[in-house]
Every structure is written in structure tokens, then in C-alpha cells.
Amino acid sequence: MDKLNHYRKCLQDLLTRYASYSKDDPDIETQLIFDTERDHYLMLRTGWDKKHRVHYCTFHFDIKDGKIWLQQNNTDVEIGEELEEMGIPKHDIVIGFHPPYLRQHTEYAAS
Image 1 (cartoon, helix red, strand yellow):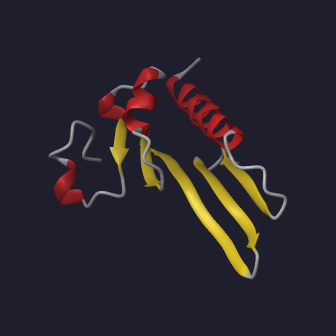
Image 2: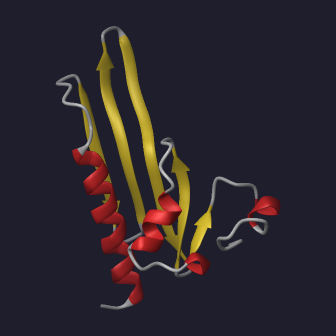
């Protein structure tokens, strides 16, 4: 399997696993969005909590220039470490929600 397809599969497997942990609430749905043409991968929670609208992005990943960009992580999970455990090297992981001037100080790719 080539690198790009491996990364796509890893992201889909990771998000599918986390979606399976979602609470069973009939009014709030977990949605997985896998855009394999443009390489956007998201896990959303959407619905209603009594009178309040829920529309929440738990995870958002993109694949750009052969690297996985973690755009959003609204959990306390160290997703970079989980990606590494799936065989993705640190130099192919970008923490996109960190400002560019801080990325160089992480153990992951700057861009």
C-alpha cells in the first residue's frame, strides 16, 4: 500500500474507532466525514441537547503535501502518539492548530 493510501486508511480507522466510543444519545449523532478526493477527515457531533443545538467538531485532519495535518483535537487524547503507533513518522505529522512560529519547537513537522 502506498503512503497516501496508508495515511487515508489510518485516519479512517482512527476516527471510526473514536466514533464507536460516542455516547448513545438518540438526539446527538456522531458523523464521520471522509473526503478521500480532497483528503479531509472529520468527526462531528450534531443534534440537540434539550433546547441547545449541538454542532461540535471533535477531530479534523487533512492530508496535504504528503503529511497529516491535525487541524482540530477537542479531546485530551495525544493523537500524534496514536498516529505514530500506526506507523506514521513524526516528520509527516503537522499540528496545524499550533501557530506556524511554534511548530518548530514541537517534535512534529513544522509544515
